[in-house]
Length: 140
Image (cartoon, rainbow, N blue to C red):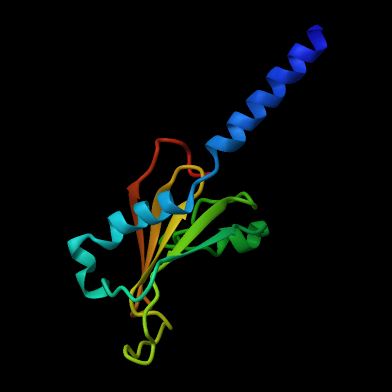
């Protein structure tokens, strides 16, 4: 009986922890929209369809490769492989807006664990390292 209760508690805790780390597509779009709608990004607020959510994770880098990452890089400090993050991409009509970066609106990068925006890629190809929002958890 004790073993069954212990197993149930372990399984229930595991489900709660797994559930807490899952972020819905709607929540990610809501977080990204709060950045997208900031006045400083008014020139890139071009909506052409629904935002697209892409799930990614960081890869393993050798110590030599890590040393080459500049402090200005949005991924600076993430030394662990497998750190999940999301990219919310706002699509646009490339035939109407001719840009170098194959996007005319923007992409918003969000850490999965903390739900903090850490990077914004603009339509002109510029990446801005930002820190916006979050739930108070560590990023990774």
